[in-house]
Image 1 (cartoon, protein in one colour):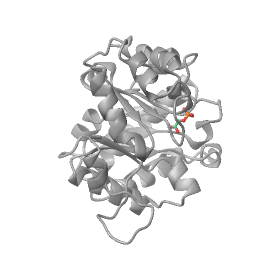
Image 2: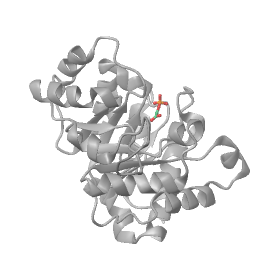
Image 3: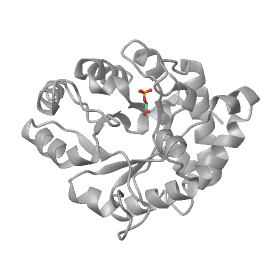
Length: 263
Ligand code: PGA
């Protein structure tokens, strides 16, 4: 089941910059000033995800520069409060002024051992606080080589969204093949578009055709100014989750404009 381009036009597009544990070399104020010179389209939502301590400052700075941008945390705890040293709850994220939260990024899953169940609980916690979750899924290389991408993604999607009410919350999915993240080896536009079609099919099975048609699915993994236009042209690609290239405002702008140009 491939969703057609007409249907794709109804979904809002997203470009999300994930700074990971980095800050832009020029400093946050210069960075946001540069972003405030972009022309932001109503149809392409812009989000920046800095490390936790910078969420409030980023929100305030973006407002100061009249930048229409959402602020996202890169993670939130699956627990509401208590003796969990180093954790940050969804309610605390909400207090910073952030409106979204990335959950289940592959670095959380592979380096910090987050399970699908924890990802699912974090997504639910975020939504309960009124934060829109950006849920990441993606296969390791051996799964692709083995030819079991569909089975892997379906089971990861189902387990990562367990108990999540997709009707009540503004959910965004990011398909990020692990072999493409931070490696400089992006998925080809064909693989990105085809696998996003697969994720949409999984979403329809887990929820319904209506939910599958409505939820934006982004591609992530070595998106750059050089490959953004080609990747954005892929059927069903509703935007990007950008890591490294989002730290450079000029590079990030080319990527944002590549998505806006597809409208
Ligand atoms: P990358 O990271 O663009 O640096 O590959 C993407 C991501 O991890 O979201």
